[in-house]
Length: 626
Image (tube, rainbow, N blue to C red; front, side, top):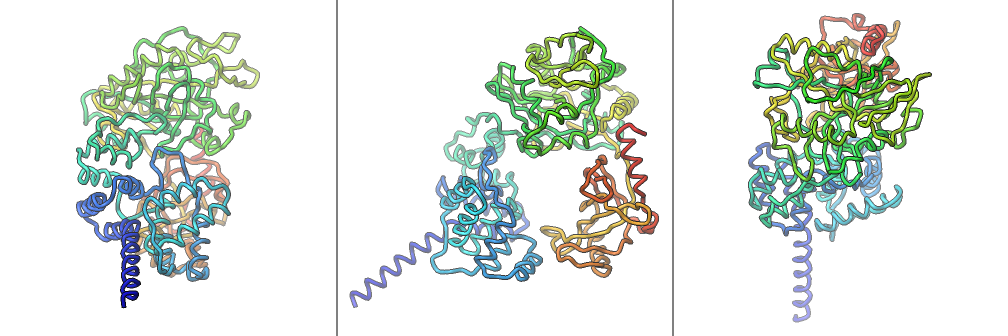
């Protein structure tokens, strides 16, 4: 009897330990399920806050990163390099399910994490600790080659309960989808750990590490957070306006700039190192190796905001020794011709995503970085200062160092004239035909105009479009820089290049709440008597319109390819877009940038849709050939 009691006690102790073990990663997964089950923001915040209070500081710090939908803090460059196909194979192997079963599950859930929980079986002894998962993520990231990564992922998921595996997969894919944004996690940290929400947000913005922000909140040291160089801050966003009158209705004093059609980029400079980051906070320096040297000579750390554009130098350059002594440009002046002009985005696109940019590309597609704001300089964060003060600091920083080409003396005569002192000495040179070489390193302070009336603003808008730019940016001179926020301090005034009437040729099921409806439309224009695809869009229609169209497409399917269907070419859409590019992505030879559905056109038959000739006409007009 004593022996039996001893065995029973050992079993109970083991089960108790196992239960404690399971309440770690499983507790996070269960909290995620509870968060997903409610639509109320306050309730979601309370669930996260209560969960964080129940964990150790180390566990809570890691959990905040996971709840933000990523495996590692935002500032880190670490990536797991684990794609959906690898996860699909691992889940298939662990579950023993065939492809048809997995596909059916995916059609049901529209989410690989949910599929994982659906097809895996729970076994005795499964369960992971949060810190154990974090360590496994780093091992997977450090592993080289798909075989090594596959083995580590399989081992991790095999030790997880199905519910834990669901959220492990979601975190790996960056597709948490439980209605929690990082901003909500920030609110939960303030609620659970102390400190104001504003202090938590600012610390996280500067550090790019929400887990570290939690640690500072626990210690009462949020105010000690410092700017982390080479961690991109959020970009301030602009609100669209419909007219010149509206553009001058929100604030008394405005700075007006051209709206360039390029890549929004932050430039970080520290100790001679320069790196560029896109609006998605991805590093893009490798696509523009001709830019960093032009800023590397600045003696102090700085963070700039600007636009990278493909740049066309003028054929007839005008020599000028004039110094820019004011950061405002008179509205009536035409200085852009002396500088050159931006080329279409389709030209710049040829440089994007390349690990190595060839000398040929560097010669054929020179770029410029048009700087319009400074967020950090001389060891001080400047975002709380008004735009007028930041503009003055930017001007003085660039002008004093004499390292940057300004818009009044950007280029010099090609007839043997030496580059101005504002050009960097160690620059790559480009040859344009038989003419003399000019510097390709163009760091340009974007020209700023003023407008006192809608008529003047309309005049500036027309001039900006004539220079090949999208339109205007109108900015409140008294406004601070608010990362990641869109308000009425920055406005954007642009008009669509054109619209096309197109015919839907194929449809796909959506994601998330649209997983059961056909919401992604591929469409084409006429090339003779056949339709050639020119784009794909999934935004612009209401839920009711999508539901109605889903029923129509289901009844008029030509070929059911599972997730995708080719359909009878009868539905006409009017689509808008930012510009048109030559591309082999579609059989038309063109692709639309940022296409969106303006409206259904039931008043038009498929035969009334636009033609490839119309698309070509728009492309040539956009590129100044019409």
